Image 1 (tube, rainbow, N blue to C red):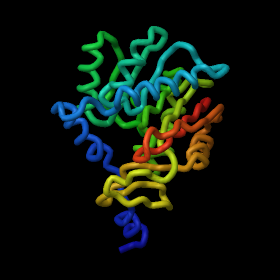
Image 2: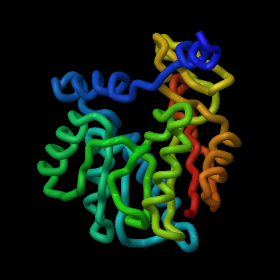
Image 3: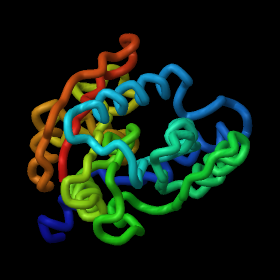
Length: 234
């Protein structure tokens, strides 16, 4: 077997649908209320508002939420009259759950089932992209592909707000942490990426973003990670 083939077989692979769909099935079955708690949603909104309060940040326009999930955050963003909101998630069931949530709240957003590594929008569509805990679910070379797509769909000067776990994982969920790749691996599947603050900022710079500000959103308890909140200009 060629060395490259052997390396590919041994490397942990991504399975985004397989990792995330079971939780959406539990939500659909009523076994849990939603992917994010009301407190977590409120925290993300506070981080977004901090970023939008920085000089030069857009105050209106088109907004894309990466990893919109079951719509916990989407609902709150879509209620803001100055923003036309779109969301994307790889799991079709998540999109169904999000649409039901939006309908019940009487708000509208454009939802798409798809991959953040191949965003289904034209160049320069959005004024603002929000990573709502999506980027740390993206592993390996897909991370650069995702950031490249985000930069493509942002208008020149548009803003990316990253909210992503950082540091070594506080809770390993039955997996093993690989410090070389910064991935948490379980059963041969790389399910989470825990970059350092420096490595994540470097990824943004490599994708052509200018990081405007960043700060740490501290974990709420010992089984959660701190989040890096980074504000980057396309």
